[in-house]
Amino acid sequence: MCLAVPMQVQAVSGFLARCEAKGIEREVSLFMLQGEPIAPGDFVLVHVGYAIQKIDPQAARSAWQVLDQILAAENA
Image (cartoon, rainbow, N blue to C red; front, side):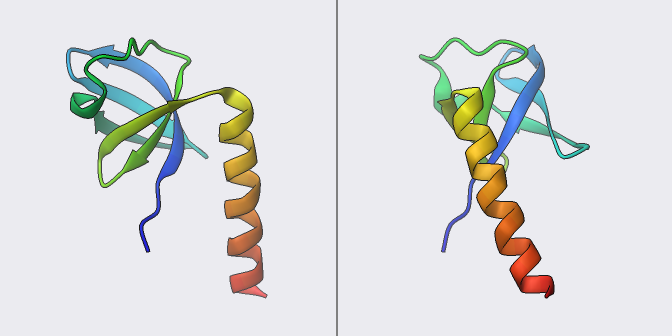
């Protein structure tokens, strides 16, 4: 199973972005989104260090709700 995590872009420098999710920051490659304008405040799906899709804020919140439910069920 592959899993992409929604993250919010904090800063962009060329093909790299500093992204944050749940207090965790990571450097993410924007190489796969070369044709998509990405700016601080945008949300992207991140898979193995690559932003693979730009998403809207509601989709990011919805994905985190589902991921939180999965983690809660796993820890119960």
